[in-house]
Image 1 (cartoon, rainbow, N blue to C red):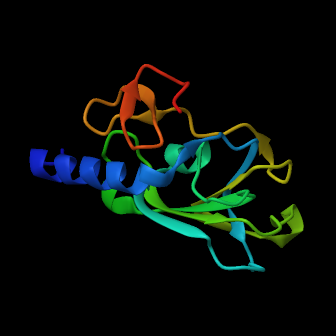
Image 2: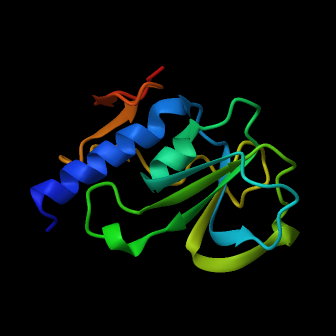
Amino acid sequence: MKSTFSLLLLSLLTTATLTTATLDPCTTNTKGKCPSSLNCSASKESTDIQAAECSHNTRTSETQTFAVFTTDHTYDSSNGAPYGTCKAYTCTAPTSDEMESDSDCWTFFWNDNGESSGVGTGCIKDPDTGECGCEDSDGTFVAGSDSCT
């Protein structure tokens, strides 16, 4: 179990990271695969966030096409795990032929390129209580809601 200080720090990092996120869930996802190569650089990189935050929120001012989440196993026992790094892209999303296996990777698409429909992650969880909810674009967690702004 994490100490209160660690959970508070993780909560603060999560809130600070999401300040520019907008609720707009991905339409498809591919778990266990990353793009084998990329045709652009990430438009935005967010660290120490839940995979669910990466799949539920767009993070760029331009149209986001896909996001690549890489698990950080430091937080495996925390509420809302997996946590890791989310890199958001605005270029052409990779096709299934352009993906390679990686058990720590999860790719979210805002098109039909993913192997599975929907977000795949379940809800965003409060890091302290584990309660489902969502976060407004200012980073405020709204417990029990799925309609944040």
